[in-house]
Length: 145
Image (cartoon, rainbow, N blue to C red):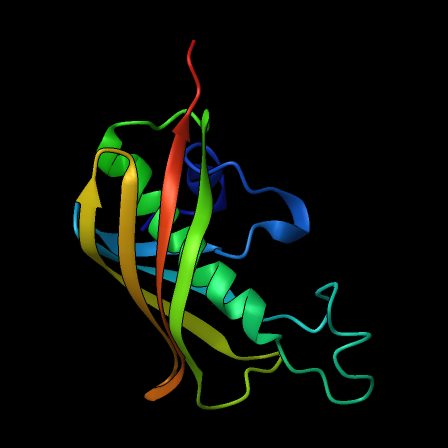
């Protein structure tokens, strides 16, 4: 298992925008990230007052951050010096609400990679329920040193 400090050594996301708390498993083609959905997250007060529901775009972002971790590890970049940018998002589906107290499991699988372009399929789960699914592509911007 890789904790938040280990994750931040690889991906550039910080503060409220780091949406993965652990990497439970990974290899060069897949991985599982974890996000503990808390009631003090920045979106809770406004989405929606009295009944906080994690925005779908943040669920997809959490999937993408898990994928970014895998892509950067695949490239051997473990110093936080590279950025990943979405190029496409497709086949996005939301099946159930995600609320504070939930443990969001982020299952991602590499579909294709060519040079610095990576395509992943991700499924977000809470327990045994699929809550979100997406296929997305990102380009990895590797900083010259």
